[in-house]
Image: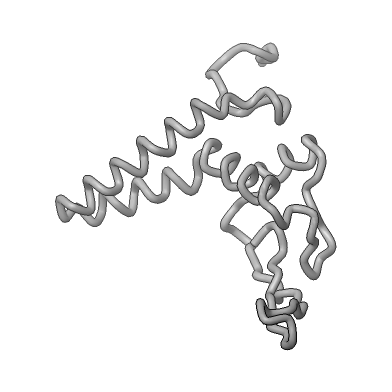
Length: 132
């Protein structure tokens, strides 16, 4: 039996650390896939659309950009009902590998009330978990 040395074999898109991800490349790959989905939909190729959507949701670039969007938005420090926030680069990279469709169970929203623009009444706001 031969043991494969680390660093040999097929290349991997997975970065070893969060700051090492080539974001420009990720955006290019996702934009290209989205353009292909639009073109296939306009051509009436629904099977092709489904296959391309699968590629989009299972690609490292798609998952990494989804985690980046959630962790860099205005509400990034607000935890959901599970109390989890991905605040460190290590936790963000681990989150990319956590994003799988198998076994996903949606959690209930955390309900808080915020003041309306008029300042006299409150309106409900549902906060999902970061994995959602």
